[in-house]
Image (cartoon, rainbow, N blue to C red; front, side, top):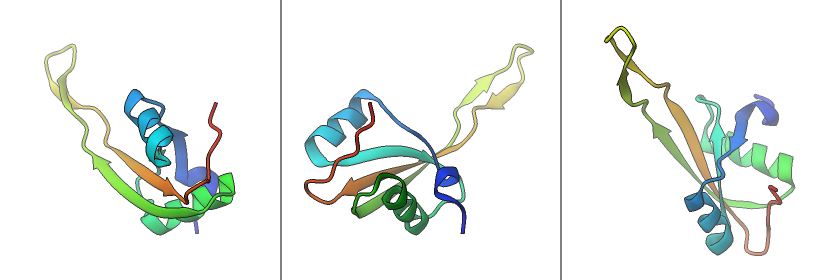
Amino acid sequence: MIKADTIIKNVRLTEKSNKLSANYGQYTFEVYPAATKHTVRAAVEQTFKVTVTRVNILNIKGKPKRSRKGLPTFNSDSKRAIVTLKQGDKIELV
């Protein structure tokens, strides 16, 4: 089993994710590429001491771009997890 601090890379603080956390109790994390729903759930519960009710995983493919030499390259792929907490639980991020 991978440690909880290596599964969760960082917290995504965007306008959309802030709205999700304020209205629905959902938090967005950027996670390790090999992470599964079960490992993300365990990592969030262990790290923040909350109860997780649902985990959604998003695999985001890197966008194509051009290098300075004109060669096609790609931004790196990423994986994000949207975690829904039990009603009344909160994560203090800031």
